[in-house]
Each structure stands twice: as C-alpha cells, then as structure tokens.
Amino acid sequence: MKLIFLGPPGAGKGTLASRAVEILKLSLGEEHPHISTGAIFRSAIAAGSPLGLKVKAILDSGKLVDDQTTIDLVRERLAQADARTGYILDGFPRTIPQAEALAGFSPGLTSPVDRVLNFDLSDTAVLERLGGRRVCRTCGHNFHVVFDKPKAEGICDHCGGEVYTRDDDKPEAVQRRLEVYRAQTAPLIDYYRARGILTDVDAGPPVEQVVENFKRALGLRGA
Ligand code: AP5
Image 1 (cartoon, rainbow, N blue to C red):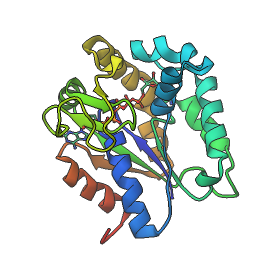
Image 2 (image 1 turned 45 degrees about the horizontal axis):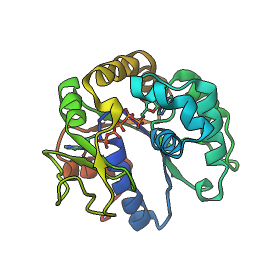
Image 3 (image 1 turned 135 degrees about the vertical axis):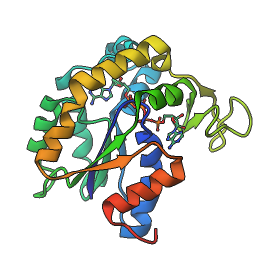
Image 4 (image 1 turned 90 degrees about the horizontal axis):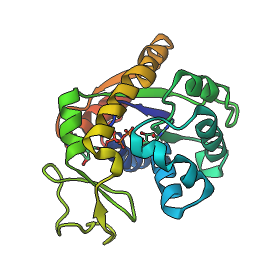
C-alpha cells in the first residue's frame, strides 16, 4: 500500500508511522519503509554532507526546502527496491508542485499514491506536543516530556542514544512552521479530497487511540 501521512507539524505523523510499519507487516505481511523527508534532511545535516550544509539554515528557521531538491530526493528514494510495493511517505508532498511531481513518478505500473491520511490536530495541541518533544539523535525515536518520557532522562529507551530537542521546535520556528503549513501544505487536503483518496484521522487522542483510528481508516482488523 502506498500511503501519504499529511498533517500539521507535531500531529504525530512520525510517531504513528513507526507503529504503522509494524501494523502493516502484521495485517498485510508486507514491509512498508517509513520515508520521512524531514528525517532524511536531518541525517544529511548530522553527516555534514553537501545536502545537509545546503538545508540546515532552512530547517532551523522552519521554512521549506525548495521543491526541486526535495522532489529529486524522493524520486531517488522511491526508485529503491524496498519501495516497490508500498511505503509510508511522511512529510512529502508538502506543496502542490510536489504533489504534481509525485503523481508523475512511476514506481512500477501502479499509482504512486493509494491513500492519503490527513492527521487533524488543533494549533493548541501542536504547540503542546512540539514544546515537549524530545528526539533520539541515533535512532530518531520521538519522546515527549509529559506523554512519553524516556525511562532514564536524556537516554533513548530503544538504542541508548542521546535524546535532544530539535532546533526547529523552538517557539519562533514552530510558529513559522504552522504558518508555512497553512499557506503551502494545507491546500493538499482539498487537492487529495477532490481525487477521492483522502481520509481524515483524528490525531487528538492518546497514541493508542490514534493507532485504532488509523486502522479503522484503512479497514485493517486484528493487527
Ligand atoms: P518534518 O520532520 O517532516 O517535520 P513536521 O512535518 O513539521 O513534522 P514533525 O516531525 O514536527 O511532527 P510529526 O507530525 O512527525 O509529530 P511527532 O510524531 O514527532 O520536517 C522538518 C523540516 O524539514 C521542515 O520544516 C522543512 O524545513 C523540511 N522538510 C521536510 N519535508 C519537506 C518537504 N516535503 N518539502 C520541503 N521541506 C521539507 O510527534 C510530536 C510529539 O508529540 C512527540 O513528542 C510525540 O511523542 C508526541 N505525540 C505524538 N502523538 C501523540 C499523541 N497521540 N498524544 C500525545 N503525544 C503525542
């Protein structure tokens, strides 16, 4: 299944995507790589690669990386063997030109998008989630200082890596990301709804309930 996770910053797309990979494996018996453009950019920054040097200031400020750079990156990633039958795109597309480009990708003979899940969350909840988010520098797992604390402060439960606060979770950058979301990404909701492939998912409840909402949205049972 080829899925897009759409929603404002902090809606829980990354958190849900990690769970969705397990659920899809159990219910459909297939691997679905979690492809997060934000995570790819953050790895490039950590590695100090030419891409990382190019995008660091953009991510820190909360603006979007230019469409062509992002489209080329995703086209290359979707051409890899593990993305042939399905994937979860988290954070792409984020503009109408990116959606148009994705529609023209042809991994195999099938459509590059089966379903778009729109994770809906109020601005107040976004601020609460991003204000308390902590991320593992090594494996990328998301924690929250209230909703999902690491067992030992500052240390990842899963890999022992260092848990840190993302630069773009500072209040000025979060405000900018919300503005950018409304102006450039929210129009994708109507774009995909008009094509009949968008399902709304209430992202407001605790994670386990959102997992149930996700399964219901895809008609998955018993996973
Ligand atoms: P990206 O990393 O994609 O950021 P984002 O879309 O703003 O999403 P986030 O990662 O902030 O949030 P999320 O929805 O994944 O929430 P999470 O699961 O972490 O992109 C970063 C930057 O890269 C962009 O600003 C841009 O510069 C660039 N970029 C990326 N893609 C691009 C593109 N296509 N084009 C151009 N530029 C691009 O959860 C948040 C917190 O809430 C966590 O602490 C979590 O533990 C907690 N939480 C999650 N769910 C729940 C719940 N149900 N209840 C309580 N707490 C919860």
